[in-house]
Image (cartoon, rainbow, N blue to C red):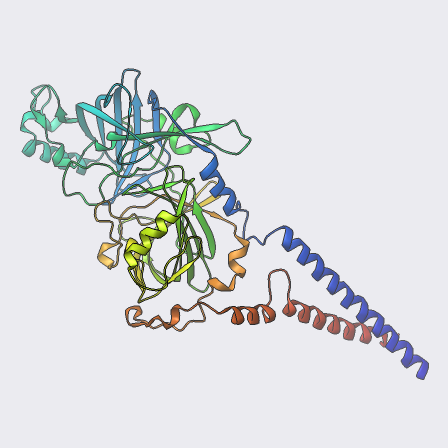
Length: 533
């Protein structure tokens, strides 16, 4: 009996050692793997790769408009209006532009089409560089004819009534209004100008830019994108000087894997393109999103954005600002941390949903001495002073006066997540073109979108304790909250937490779990060893 007990104990010890040794080996292998291959939540490109594409794989070309340009998706203008654009330019500057308007945000139900004929001309001997948007070209144009063709019976009656009552100079005897299919709203050789009645203006042609973008660093396959001036977020006057761009248009001869472009190319003003309904997501799931191009804001502001959403309804955003249209010369960086809530689906835009964003912590890092001096000039004698390349934390008492940001900060947003091929894109509400004030009330919620953000992997953000604000206790009324919750975890607290919290590479928690598993397996093996035959 003693010999059997010794043999039994030796067997248990050997099995326990084997399982525990395997657990340690697996742990080391996983740690090594996680160091080399960051944790990913899907088959998405790395965030830094996309940002590098923004900075390195785009080239501004001389303004050669000759050819045909089309929208790359159903565009959402303020109002909202849902539009597809089809522009054709000839060698001498003659143009034929088609704006197809729709009843829905997926551009599946045509409403009417506006066709415009005219000519674009340089503002001087050469194309003039824009003072309003560095990197763009200012252009002058002349309209010759503008006509509207309705596509539904209801829209035809509406257009006909407007044309009869407000377009007296546009009437002709060639075709009675009851049988008309196309209604002229502008003619340069007659006293016919009632574009105000349909809120149509071609001021977007005053600002243009062409960019050649390569798909990868070693790829020779490129695409040409045309950017024209934006339209006002609030239509209160016909004339407006663009200060940013609309969605890019793609050159027809270099279109690759663009179903929207193909449908537009095979359409006419009589047969408008009808798109397929895209896939929408109404859930703001944990993910990382980054800019796909150097974005432009009114006031010659250029930036890239990085947004991260966690499962605890917290978010983190990094906004990098630059002084050039290629986003290559950084000026300062803002880092915001807060919480968000997802509300009901939007009533005005299909596939969109309402949300609320709150900024609880705000950090500034200036990246040159001139910008640092500018921020400090607004602060006066307040201490501490901002230092270049040193992160400065804003508080409720110490906001960032230079850019008008104070804590706490709350915005009423509208979001839209759309799938295009294998990629997911996030659209956030567009800022007002005049005034630039943030939507701090539900009635100021945007009805159009900024440049899209592409989903990507970011392994670091999920494990970094600095972005976790779930430990703070929030009140329902954010405006009454004091600045006490705006304190980041101290270094000592962070060190304590890092020594006791499981890391993605495998920490003490994983070690305990594996050792417990080895003990359980030993008990099962012991029962199997002592089992009578």
